Length: 239
Figure (cartoon, rainbow, N blue to C red):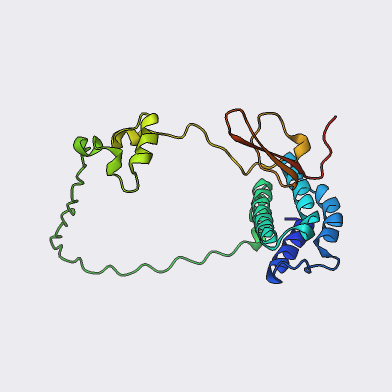
């Protein structure tokens, strides 16, 4: 990992040791972020890395206005992301080629030692019968057949599943333990992908770091609460 990212990780660890009082560097974390982001942008390895740099810079800029518990969570998350970046950079670097040993010139080659004198042959020994060891018998592994009676039991026999949860499972078509074994997730959301707001595409599901400027809630016609928020990460939106 390059020097700006090493320096940022050292500052964050020192900030954690000092109790998140914004005194790890002279002038505070905000002033440190102003010159760190310029150096870090020049060392971005890909688009995702550029997004991480912008979001980290915005989070560091707003560090002084963040609460104590929020500072703790922010520092821990940035340290984890820096460790992931370090492993990613190390994996992307090509391995150095193995150097072959130089061959010695004929005059520098080691001299061969003369062969040892022939040893005297000892008298042949009488061959004794060798007892052959019998191979150890392995215990057969018993395969347990499915228990149709147990699989046909109601899901309410499972600890923690009561009548209310059983009603919810019944809406999914799950009534027995066997039905429950065949319920699989229908999607997987990867929240480790980070992007700045000005690079988001409609329909994407990504993680971002920003400052919440405004939060509003309203009720729909079905009496459901809809919450909307205005978030900024310092990037300029595309026109």
